[in-house]
Length: 286
Image (cartoon, rainbow, N blue to C red; front, side, top):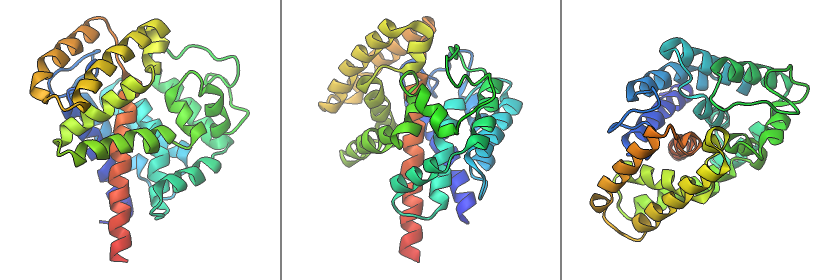
């Protein structure tokens, strides 16, 4: 399998794997929600994968092509945040540098005005919930700065944009260590994914919730996530938490609360882990 095909397959696998974890408030194999189903996410991932992985494509083109393909396939915004996070990771893996974190930093330095134009148009096309207006570099206006600069402007209110400003620190310094810790303890893959999701949800307020329901609600969800995360990390068997987690899942969905940013960061973490494995195998075979 060549690198383009491997990256596309890793993206689709990361999206599918994330759906296996019973993530409270988000779509998963045990429960749909927010007018979205597991099959919607699977179809969106399958449609976006070739564009995310297009060899040599600029970040803006990867974002634009992936968003359009997902919208055409599902008729709604399913995976905008996932695409915004995974496009730079895919481009970085293409460099072949075994240090994926460093390669992402190089990709972010290369972002330009053309990337911003394409990304802005894709975001408007996807029309994410709670988008709102921005005083500077609003996505509904023609960009005047690079995509990196525009994302830095939005970093204080959007955790996905913040990754463009901090070199994907949350993925490499928070998500991946959480995934490795959980797998090292012998957790099943879906429970390791749940641990990553709860790590993000308990580490900082979910900015998707902040935009739609406000800061107080986001903080309340974070406090609840910390309780679950502490018990899971403390060694409490998942079987003893499952019914309570599913009950919270139902409660969040009834209230229209979706920790979408935490879910998107979880997909990006799984994708980064798979890309690191691809790069290690390529290095060992070289």
